[in-house]
Length: 358
Ligand code: TXA
Ligand code: MG
Image 1: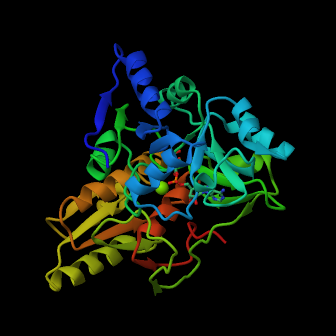
Image 2: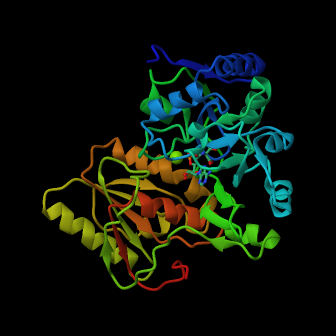
Image 3: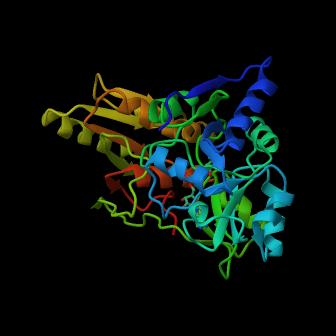
């Protein structure tokens, strides 16, 4: 058990010294949370089983859920994996450093605990200066899942990390709020055709420019016509303590949300709203705890606000959070909808609208 978490707040005068300190902690087999361009990660030496166990313990993460190994140079890919297909190099050249994780065949040097016992390894080069300098300075590949308690929304600030993991990890590097706010896109390069396992910071359209044969390997919501479902998933994900009801679609979204809010309030429940500005303009219920995601046409802003919004609303002790899912699938939009679907206890689909991918 860690006694005290060291908080290293980066500023222009202490950058090198903070990176050196954090790298030293990692080299000593301990855990450091640090910013990437997507979300904060909880890092440890990816090649040392005892260090990697500390990540699982701190997060309460199921041991069969593998970690992403973070690197700072393309040469490190060759140390960790073999039989790398040419297409993988094309994607590395196009998107690294950046929010793209590639699943490759692992070399034996990568321990089972890091890969969840799989013979593949997830690798990514993050596009964040602090992350890259830290990995370089440590001189080792760094395993890092998102730095939240397993099942909670991913952290986009050091404060989110501290609120989940204080006294459970050795240090946090505070580099301010992250840029993208949603995790990396995960692409499996070991299957017959490259497969997207998780939508994320790199849009599917952008990947397809380089790899038209790319297929989608994650489940998407396809029900239409006001059906309600409780997703039965292997793991709970991105979930606040309050019940989350996601309303997807565009036609009549504000009316539907007004109705749902009023129904829950009649039962005496405390309701909050996570909504685009466009929908919120037509919400007539008064006195709601509301978190505004941004305008529908600014999907990057919405992405950067999703996890923060879920966490902020959850701090208000609500019974129910209603989520406005009037979001297009473009670019990072499919990742936003994917995370909201996973966070939801209940999903209501309004119509077969433009945002329902087939
Ligand atoms: O943006 C990100 O990817 C962030 C930052 C910190 O880099 N990390 C992150 O890690 O989101 P995590 O552990 O929260 O999500 C890793 C995802 C999981 O869905 C895991 O199952 C999948 O990657 N994954 C890891 N290794 C895999 C493998 N060998 N095969 C298939 N999926 C794998
Ligand atoms: Mg995670």
